[in-house]
Amino acid sequence: MRIEKVVNELVDTCVTDSLDLNIPHLSFMFSAHIMYNDHTSFYYNKQGVDIIAIKVGDPFEMWQSFCHEVGHMFLHCTNQQVMPHAFNYKQEAEAEKFALLLMMPEKLIMRHKLYEAQDIANYFEVPIDLAMLRMEMLIEYTRANTFD
Image (tube, rainbow, N blue to C red; front, side, top):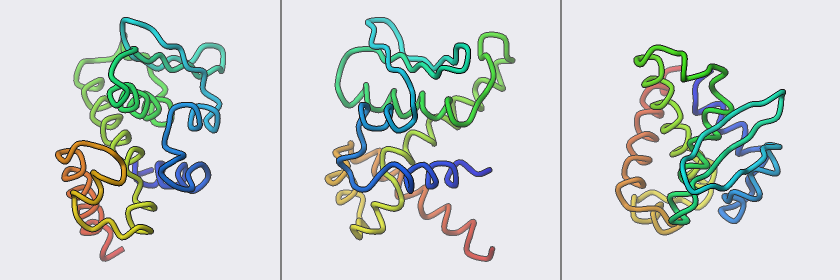
């Protein structure tokens, strides 16, 4: 299943507007337990309980880390400590993509007609470079799905 489809389905069920894009709301909707700490961010499933650890720091970096770890939660079921480096690299790239899609959902971009990177950056309160990357992802996704 494409990452876009997974994120779009989650957004459809959990996100009404940008006010829903926050750690408390989404962790509740995803039934994930949040553990704040001073060391690192990671995702772990222990006996069927999803746990996302978030390193305390800059609020935006915490949000970005949360979205990344949610990506692991929904996309991956492996223990990266015992997986080959190349496979871990692939999973990290997938989680990064998932994070960008969740932080700036297509549904809200289209609903609010956010057609410029600066509009996306302003609406979602993200740096312009991330908004530009999100625009590029939308363009590529559209190209790939034009003839489906």
